[in-house]
Amino acid sequence: EPEVTQTPSHQVTQMGQEVILRCVPISNHLYFYWYRQILGQKVEFLVSFYNNEISEKSEIFDDQFSVERPDGSNFTLKIRSTKLEDSAMYFCASTATGLASLEQYFGPGTRLTVT
Amino acid sequence: GDSVTQMEGPVTLSEEAFLTINCTYTATGYPSLFWYVQYPGEGLQLLLKATKADDKGSNKGFEATYRKETTSFHLEKGSVQVSDSAVYFCALSDSQGAQKLVFGQGTRLTINP
Image 1 (cartoon, rainbow over the protein chains, first blue to last red):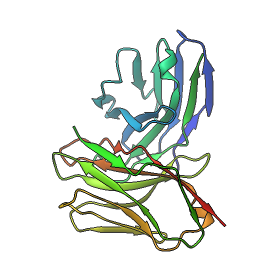
Image 2 (cartoon, one colour):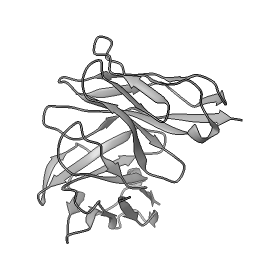
Image 3 (cartoon, helix red, strand yellow):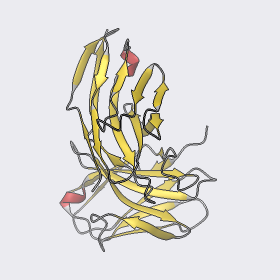
Image 4 (cartoon, chains in turn blue, green):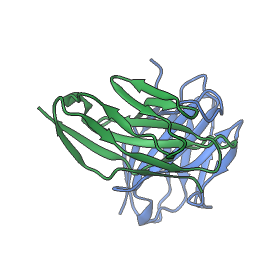
């Protein structure tokens, strides 16, 4: 069964450093998402991406964040200058269409620890 | 904005017990409602969904009914198993053009043999 994959599974970085989290969505999917979950808190939407552009972003997704689909398979989230409060589990998801009723397929997550 | 409120956890039950995890929502449109489950070390997986009022979603013995009048989507299972131990997330996706999911805080369920 096709699945969403994410690398690395755990990333430790120092405050102020740039990190890139990588995702490989399901191959025929067209809509891509990033969510995050700070320990003990809700899973929060960060950004959605379709047709090589951001379709929606949350207040969390400020200028320090960017997303890219550099080739036909990868979908990346970049944090330019990490802060302690960026420590969280980051989940990538994808869907075939943008229908609200459709299941989103999630990757296993990347745990980001900023020290 | 849209929001989901979920029963606080953690919840610990014995095998074969009846399970209810409460979920209520606030939304401006006509959302689709979901239960996702996260097993240890894995990503979130769809457990069940309902896309309109009075729909019942079901899967693996779990059920939830979309109740518009009470804005609820409570998860139930008649007889839980040790393998049901996981974190359960209630979520909605608003029909007003946005495909993002809005999640509840998650409920950690532990089933003891």
